[in-house]
Length: 531
Image 1 (tube, rainbow, N blue to C red):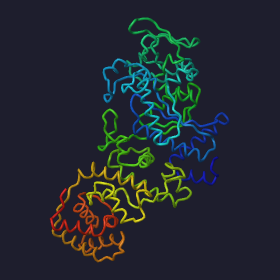
Image 2: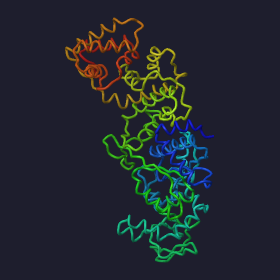
Image 3: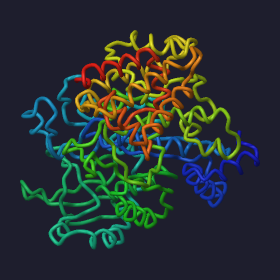
Image 4: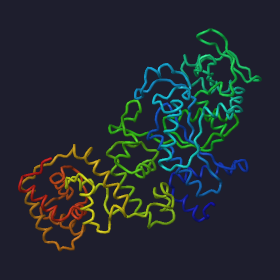
């Protein structure tokens, strides 16, 4: 059941991009009239490799648009995760076993390539199974569809015959986009060779629209071969295949990366030639590595989804996908702590928000109206600093500090915080510890530390984070730091071995006043901490 007009107005007024996308779909449905009994969302997957962070991003973002649409419209929805598993096996990925065996199957449909891992019917079946388990692990609501099954079942036949009837018009769209040599061999139809079973990229000698067949020359035997374009005897070439899928399945929405912008335009033109309106779409920006270079699967730069989930929650990854999807963003390890803490900040705000502010909050797009109830009293960044100062190596040690800081918090009652504790230990060990470099304090800085110790010791037993923060400010001003940022950076460099750090009052409250004082005394007595 759709939301009330007031709630719909609030959602649209939020200007959140999933609602802007959903509004386009509402207009599409209105234009279609009674011809649409549901709205179909689609995401595509190429099973020549394993699911990756881009797969997650596309399904997560599409699901966000779907949720937004379901709030503002009562038209039922479906989401298809479509696997292009009839595609020809073009090259052997270097990370697969049985390389020599796989070389013998180049050109074969992916569902006809043996599984190099020996666990499934084919390489495509192996990767399709991984895809489904991958999507299931995140709780996505979707229907899996196989290109091979769609072609063989005849589901694509009607549209393939339309393509054959409109062959010249499609070629007129495609040929200007190709190089001179490719123009000589291009065809929107890729026949599956009856002799070898391989998906062929060959020029057509003849077309018979009435019979629904094409003729090509077998390059090895020199014979002319006639095959139907239907029944899985042919596969459509990439951009024509995309358009054919949109038309055959009646897809209403599919997003894609900015690198496919021109492909979307060409496929849309072909869809119109076939008598259908192309789906609504959204072009998202690609991710960058730590050096600002575009991420490439073949180069292996950037960050994989498995790596993210070693150090941050799935929700933090979903948040990262939600934020500024049309902006190129760095996808590397150092973005994880901020994403985790941003998620916690948005989660805490969500409980107090109403109307358009709630719908603008990423939490609604990740959880709808059912976010976790847990209150997390410690940020992820603060946990990292706690690990740094305490040299903790296990969760029990960290929970000892947390329990003193927040007596009501326990691992059982705060499962999200307990997750963050485990993440913090691993992240610190792999990314913070190797870069730590303690600075030796100057005489003036030692004097300032001595005064800070006195200031902290003078506070009452009931002192809290705000009191500690005031004490740090007071000492910084007394020692004539014109820019108090320099004073805080001094503390970070001397006490934590890093140039940036937490709000010092919160850190002292979590680590403990006596422990912080002991840390400063150690610096004063030894002339500086050592890694």
